Image (tube, rainbow, N blue to C red):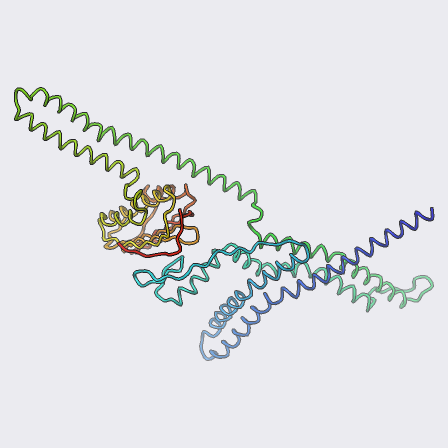
Length: 469
């Protein structure tokens, strides 16, 4: 009986020591988290406040001193915060790796290089700018907002101070209040048994204070784990797709599959109709004409010769219709020379002067080429019919796994997908490949329509060239 009691007492003592050791370690880590969160919050805020005060003092004789001070403070705060984004995220990743063995991925999309196009504009990978300096900073900002890892780090910069305060505040509050109780004995009482009222007050204060300190220490590891879990979810957003995201994705794929099937069926009906009403009818007429010629050869050779010439012209027209039909299915120049040369040939036949700039290291997949080619055909036709433009520019670019096409005209603007089926058809065609259509068309023009879809090139080369048509 005595042995069992000793064993039980040893086990309880060991568990208590382990819990207190874990709590002490958690408390130390919580303090480290608080200290680590300070630079990402205090530095930007301090820089913003100091710059705002200095600006207000420098422009105090003007009426807009407050507005200018706030504007400068906001700009400086954002710049300082941007400088601490990656450092704060890397510090958190290091803590998770050391404390819990959790290694978060840090894959950044490559930053495209600046390129000077044939018109003297700097291409950032996202937009054109006349100034190289403006293009450099616009590229950095746009890239940071598009890169998934950088966006997650930006979110963590905002979440980390709030999360740390919410988790560390109660723990440190318990420990601080416990220390205050232990030192001041705030429980007023008079006479507990044989001890005096003052002694009872001190003893109760120490007991309550020690209990609060122990509670804070024991809760600290849970606060650290909660901080790690939130950090993992924020910094590794792609690690776990939510049910709602998967549901939306399934719905999008179902819709694009239905659109693709519908477009294919409509295209087959168009081909059948063109063959029936065009080339087939001409070939039937040619057969009948040849039969008539056969009967006239012995009786009226002059009439037979006229009919023979007519049959030859009909055969030439039938051949041209078949070529046009084949070109509408898949243009030979597109199959043989690729998207760039096909669009240049299209520009030569366009009703408006069209300038084409192409930067393609190699060829995309044939379905992607066809979808982009026919989308550009539709956009050029729309520009000629509705825009009242005098010039059209087509830019084709491949960067970071995305094929981007920009069609710009100097017409009257106000391009609206709801006014017809052309732009909606392009949007559906691109949706089959997870592509998007963006329209920037204000009243008075110009109109800029951007097509962007993910794709892989067949065999990328190291060089990239620009060409015009």
